[in-house]
Length: 86
Image 1 (spheres, helix red, strand yellow):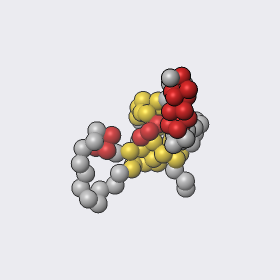
Image 2 (cartoon, rainbow, N blue to C red; image 1 turned 60 degrees about the vertical axis):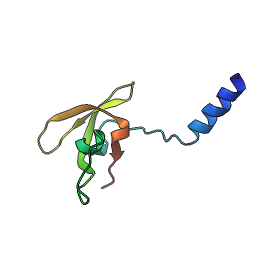
Image 3 (cartoon, rainbow, N blue to C red; image 1 turned 135 degrees about the horizontal axis):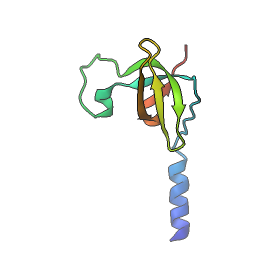
Image 4 (cartoon, one colour; image 1 turned 30 degrees about the horizontal axis):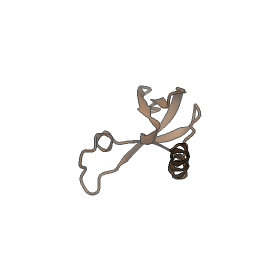
């Protein structure tokens, strides 16, 4: 049974992408309707931003800073954030 669980964990970990964000990175945040699994109009954007990562916590959420307004957003899970390439 232990060997079965190890093989299952290896198969699962093969498909997991680790996301590492550092402070001052530029990121895009998922729109709130996507995070709540609500339907969007067909051509509505699914990402908004860019935002600046201001704090990274060890248990995976991060705090984002809106550079236009100077407000903070978060904590937000990393699965709703992706790197922004300018």
